[in-house]
Image (cartoon, one colour):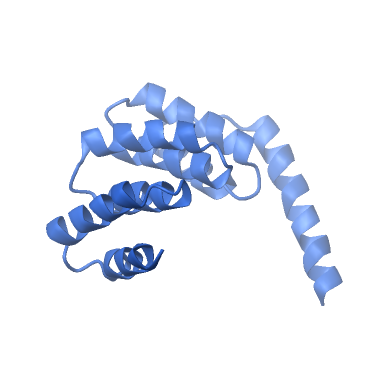
Amino acid sequence: MLATIVKLLGVLTAAATIFAANTECESFRECLSLAGLHSALSPSYAARLYAQATQMRPESKEAWLGRGALAQDTGELNVAASHLARAFALDPLCWRVGMNIGNLAARQGNTATALRAFRHVIRTNPFVPQAFYSRGFVQLL
């Protein structure tokens, strides 16, 4: 079973690489959709698509959030912080941006910033249970 899963992942990765080499997005929405699709299988291609999306619409919180989340996933924490700060400036009430900022700060060991971000999400969006959980977790650190 495990061998089958590993083989399937190899095939999917190869397919994503071939697809990425032959595909460019033509619209903002297409860039975001393709970037989300390729985030796990081909992060470098996803990064190019998110960059293209932010060039098409620099005022898009979704594009900057995607770039920040991807940078965080690939370990580029300073880059992630910059992109997430841009997304926050565009929409300070977006709970997904706040959660990503809090999670990034916690990952970097900055508990004060993480708590501030989670408290902000709770204050502006009290129906986001992840914020309560994350705040509690960071307080235990």
